[in-house]
Image (cartoon, rainbow, N blue to C red; front, top):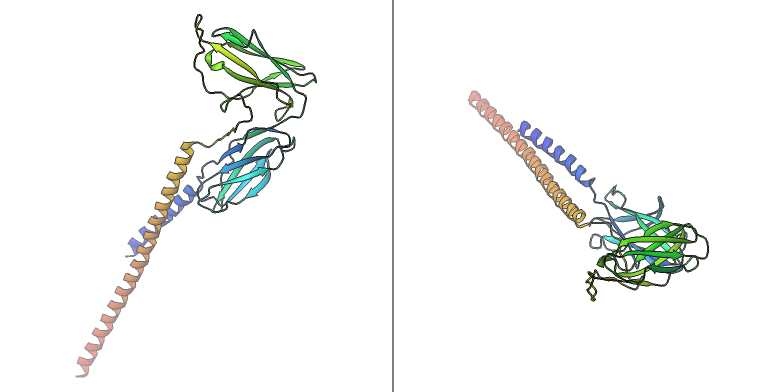
Length: 298
C-alpha cells in the first residue's frame, strides 16, 4: 500500500505542475476601438478589450504606461470590458494595449492599437492625376497640399479595410498608385500631420473610377468601399485561433483538475483502507492472545 500511495502522490504532483503550466498559457487579449481609429477632436470613443472567460480584471496601457483598470460586470459570462474616452484630444491619441488577469496571473499585452485625433490643423486639398476617371493600366497619382507647413501626409481610401499611406513633405506630397486596377476604385481623402497620431481636418473626398480593359465602357466590379470616412471601424488583434487555443487550454485545465481530485480521493480512500486493515489485524492479534491466555489458566 505505501508504494501505491507514493505513486499516487508522484502523479498528483506531476499533474499539479502541469496545471500550473497550463494556467500560465493565457491567450493574448484582443483590443479594438469604436467608432473609428480616426476620431475628430472633442468626439467620444471607446476602447474594448476581450480576454479569457475567467478574466477578473483588465488593464489598459497607454504609451507604455498603465492608464486605467476595469473589472467585468458579470464574470465569467462577460469576458470583455470597455474603456471610454469622453473627448478625444492630442493627449489621448497614441498607442494603446491591454491585458487581463485570471486568478493570480496576468496575460501578455495585446497587439498595439493606434488612435488618431483629427481636426487639429487646416484642411488640405486633394487632387488626382491624370483625372478621376481612368482606364485600367493607367498610372494614377494623388497630390495632397496644405497651406500650413507640415511634415507628414496621409492618404486613406474609404472602407473598413483601408490603411493609411504615408508620405513626407513640407507643403505637399504625392502618392503614386502606379497602374490603376479595379481594386483602386473608391473614395480617397488626405490629411496633414506633424506626428503619426495628430492629424489635420480631412480633405474633401475625391472619387476614383477605374474602367475595365480598353474598349470596355462599363466599370469592373470592385470591393465594397464607403464614401463616409466616419463609418464604424474595428481594429481587432485577436484571432479565431487564439480563441480556439484558449478554449482548448481551458478544457485541458478542467480535465487535469478533475484527474487530480480523483487521485487525491483515491489516496485518502487508500489511507482509510490501510488504517482499517491495520486496526483489524491488531484486533485479531489481541483477541487471539486473549484466548490463548484463557486456555492456559484452565
